[in-house]
Length: 616
Image 1: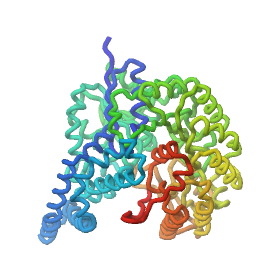
Image 2: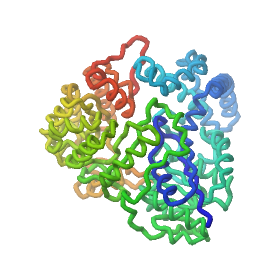
Image 3: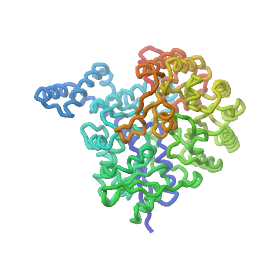
Image 4: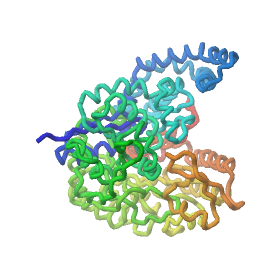
């Protein structure tokens, strides 16, 4: 009996440090169940392509030509009364290129000669663990991303970011931009790689889209595959992003006309297995649970029944076979792994990360089996537990098993600042290999702390952080500004809290509050008189627009000022610490596990020839 064949594709733009969990997890489940599975990490292939001397030489030459001719041609067309969309884009693009070349033209000339050395630094442990070489390499890669973006301005690409500001989160805007090869930086890349994808003769191609930065690149890939593959290949899209807008997609046959035959809703491992079997056997897609799909008349969207997903212990173990492990921009891979799904607290008013996730927990035996498999098969010794939160008791049990099983790994995870994280537990966690915890500190204001319903004692947070620091664990604090009604004084209290406790808050990451459509606050804000929520015309956006009904809180300009003040004040408090320049939690973990908390904390970056830090 023949078996189904699936190709899983992961599009740009995502971190280039490690392969994404979606590819590894779905591949493991499909292969365990006899489905032939091909993996294509197009994200790392994209970065590998643009970080080539030849490619950057072409970019440099193209920018010189555009600097000379683009603005002249666009202004001439404008004088002749041609003011269509492309003319307006070209006028803005010409100005942006002029500014870029004036500021960085000299650096651009040397970029093709420097790029190979920068990439090698990211992959070679002898060079990576030299902070000066690493920071120089990251700045070279930054410049390369900026240069690659400029011919497609206003698009902006970075190692950890992509946006196309003129592309709204609507289906029609996505149709326009995915069909516009002249202004879509990914189109030519896909034209090169799609033939090799179709040469594998898959029956199903699954595209995983997990964040805003992947939406336009991912839908561009989907549209181009639809056109190149024809009706014999089933194109499906999965990932957490489209789970969040499933109600919109259920009423948008236009999406399925242009981009995909189906969209997998929720956790995709088992849905992909059942879909592969249904397509292979020619069965009706209504039999595949948790699926939106194109109907025969194309005027409606089919929605199959929602069914519970299998328990975590029943899902196949991650499988990395076929991924280019030597191409990722890290000397040692730090793989994500899950001990459980969902958040055992789940009441924070600002949070919607639980959406589309079925709460579950792996057995410790299965978790140990998976870690040992990844360690022994692929040499992986560094892990990130990506659980939303792990109970202190569970974390302690995990740690003891890691020690008893002599796994010899290091790991990091999220954490809630609750009393169960005693100094004794933190010591045990350190012994098991824990080197970094990403704590949800959020705010320095008692009032905001209560409004966001953290469910932990405000006054106990710093003592818990001290116990963690004393154990030798690096404490990273999530904070954010702009929660509805937050005042400048309350924002300042958060800044002051960070600056006064750099001995136990070793690093932080700041963000701005956004109102998720699936958050608790979204459901009650209008009832409580806090916010007035507005319907958005961007039907593919998971965030809501709102206005504050009261006079309390910061205006947009005040919020921007406090964000800038946070960066300035904390740079002074930390004294241009090395961690500001490591940027990525995986890199911070690797440095801490190699050198220890004290060394990384004490290491400073000089100001000579060093630009002001760009915040990530």
